[in-house]
Length: 291
Image (cartoon, rainbow, N blue to C red):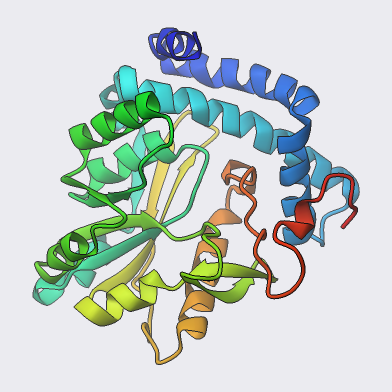
């Protein structure tokens, strides 16, 4: 039933999806207690300079943007996202061209924004790009997500297929992946994210060292005039270094700079700080605990 409802929503004109998502997101802000708690904790940790009222408003906006993002995913899977290509403002494409000079590969590092699926398609429209992919636990959703990405991206690569990633980067291809989630201690180092220690993937540094690829940060955002922005930053300087922790901090700082432009559009619903050096896993998010 849920899939059918999403399919029906995807047939609506895009501007109505945004309006519908805003309304339903306002409802979810009231009823989705656990998700709102996670968002609230993340925002209180990352924006201590904001007043309690400002933080709570950001929580509400974040819930609305996440529901808009859900409808945008349906639009990317079953709608006609090509109709929006004329509304894309691409900024910094020259940084990709410069990074590829001499046949160099490019690691295009993004984050989990609420418009991940639709925004990703817009990135692929701006530059031919391979994308990494993590298999979804729900087989049906996995099929829809993968099928959609195979329509728009040059290659869809499972995260476990390291050799495929390396081969593409060494051939001068562009590989896009998001490096901002908590995958636990095994594959991570600890580095500050919005000033809070976070388990951070060290794969960006390792891939750059193994292939000589340049690292470019990408952001994709909804603008509130009905348009979209895809922004490519200049390649990271002095990267990689001889320290995985320093490299992780470098990437996190660059991602934070992008996220701060439209903070409500980031997926604060993820438990970004669930793994810490000390204390129980997920301790920040214990329901009812104040931070």
